[in-house]
Length: 213
Image (cartoon, rainbow, N blue to C red; front, top):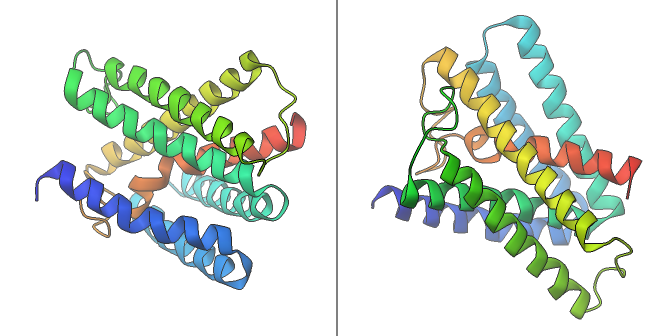
């Protein structure tokens, strides 16, 4: 299979059971969260050599997975919204970057382009808005009291943080001189490669929930 087919197949295999487990919740969700945490922790331990940065990264992982557990308990649809934004941002960045290419966004991550960044925002706004409208139409989330500008701003912030998280991991991979954090996911590399942006987006969403929403 070519690279795109591998990524698509792997994404479907991951996302379908992941969303099912999140909806189901309970002890199954706790076990799932623990397994994903241990796998990402293992990859991070193998990636980072600086002890201070290593422990900071562990603190970020613990905080992010704790935030995900907390959000699942108090606001399932906000958690799903954050995940959809992160996934949309990744898909848009990958597809626009591959199709349009163009100038590089940063030397840290040679695959990141300005077209990919624009694609991340385009997919984030289109899919994120569709999720909100569809959920409201089914009356499965409370009526939103925020203006269109505020909702768009939240989506853009989450997408930006998702992209920054991706670049941060790329920086450490560049230091280590490796392409991926592992080989667990065909077409993606390691698990940390797949959820690097989501780790930071979850933290941002948690802060939004506590401080603003």
